Amino acid sequence: MTTLVIAEHNNEALKGSTLNTVTAAIQCGGEVHILVAGSNAGAAAQAAAQLSGVSKVFHADATYFGEGLAENIAAQALAIAAGYSHILAPATAYGKNILPRVAAKLNVSQISEITKVDSPDTFERPIYAGNAIATVQSSDAVKVITVRSTGFDAATTGGSASIDVIAAVADSGKSAFVSREVAKSDRPELTAAKVIVSGGRGMGSGEAFKLLEPLADKLGAAMGASRAAVDAGYVPNDWQVGQTGKIVAPQLYIAVGISGAIQHLAGMKDSKTIVAINKDPEAPIFSVADYGIVGDLFEIVPQLVAELG
Image 1 (cartoon, rainbow, N blue to C red):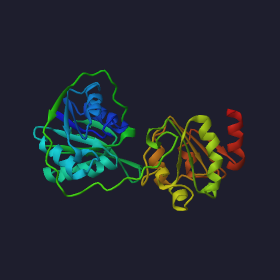
Image 2 (cartoon, rainbow, N blue to C red):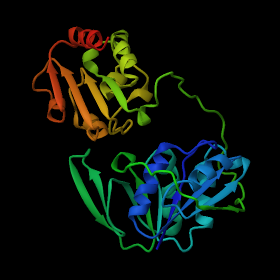
Image 3 (cartoon, rainbow, N blue to C red):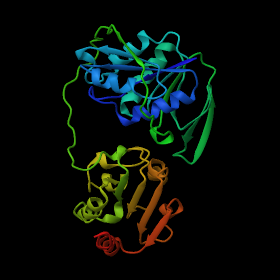
C-alpha cells in the first residue's frame, strides 16, 4: 500500500496545504511518495524530500507545468498512478481542479475534503456546512482524496527521501495560462495566518473596516470577512471566510460584528480560540466562541487596541 501526494507549490517552495496533506497520507498507512510537477521547481522538490515520513519524490519539470494547469498536472499524475492505493491532494482550488480529472480517468469516485483518516479505506468528512460528519468507506481500488488542511497537523521536516527526476508528459494543449491578478498585502496570507481579525455586516461599511486595522496590526493578524460583508462590497472577496470562501483554523480568530451563519461557522469553527464581539447576545457566533463580548463594536474594538497598546 503506497500513497501519492500531488504537491501544491509555487515552484520555489511547498504550500502549507501540502504539509497537511502529507500528514493525512502518512495516516493512510504504507509508503508516501510526492509528485512535484513544475517549472524550475528543484527547490520545491528538495523541500518535499525533507518532509518526515516521505520515502520518494518524483520531480517532473517543464515550462507548461509552471502555472499548475490542471490538464497537464493531472496527466502527469496519471502517468505514474499505477500501483498506488491512494492519491491525495489538498482541498484547495489547486487540488479541487486536478483530482476530479484523475478520479474520472481512473473510473473511481473521489472522496472530498476529508478531516480524519479512520482506516486505509474509511474517512470522515463534513457535510451540511459542517453540521454533521459523514463517515465514508470506499471499495475502489484507488482512493482519490482531497484533504481539508485544517483537519491535520503540518508534516515536519527531518526526512531524506530520494528524488527521482521523471520525464514530463507532453503539453495537453487544452488550456493556456493567460494572466494572474494577485492581491498584494503586507499582512499574513489568510489561510496560513496564526491570528485572524474578521468583520461582518455589523461593520456597516467598508470605511468602518479601518477600525479593525489597528487591532490586526497589534496582533500581526490577517484580516477576513463574512460573506455578507463581501457581498455588500465592504471588502474584497479574497477576504471571505466560510463554506464558499476560505477554510481557516488559526490559533486565534476574532469575529467582529459577525452574526455567525452556519456557512461562516463552517469556515472557522476549527480555530483554536474564538473571540466574538456582537451587540446581539443571541447571535449564533456565541455558540462556538470561547470568549464573547456583548456590546457596541465601535466602542469595544478601540478599547481592545488601547489595552494591547
